[in-house]
Image 1 (cartoon, rainbow, N blue to C red):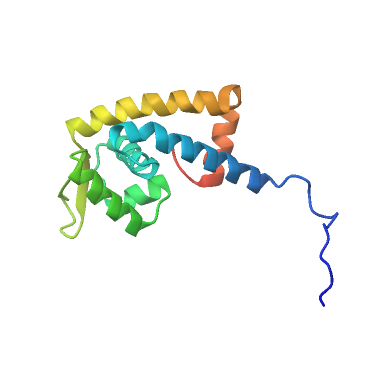
Image 2 (cartoon, rainbow, N blue to C red):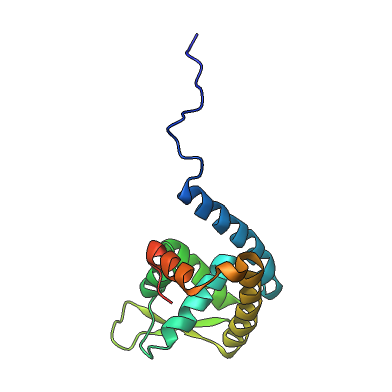
Length: 149
């Protein structure tokens, strides 16, 4: 019979990564519920948000750029972009300089949904993170995730 494994006193009582993971799961579950009002998953909302952020540059947006912006896998991004296109929230247009790529743009409907969903998600962020969602926390999480605002 094997030796009984006991708790290791050298383990920290709180692991920062586990706390971040738990907070992310809690937020994702709640955000999925919030954005479902517009027929979105939290991943689709994140991609819609990413198109909105990248649109500010006034440059053509590719799926690869969107995946980097949001931190999603390129194949997953492609799947969700097709779904957002079917929901008439984004359009894929010919890229002006790369014949192999498609440029992503928000539709009027997509822009409207993004504004409403962002307002609801911001309200959720306030409920979940409250006063803790300060500038320092946002900077730290942005640095850890590698995502840009």
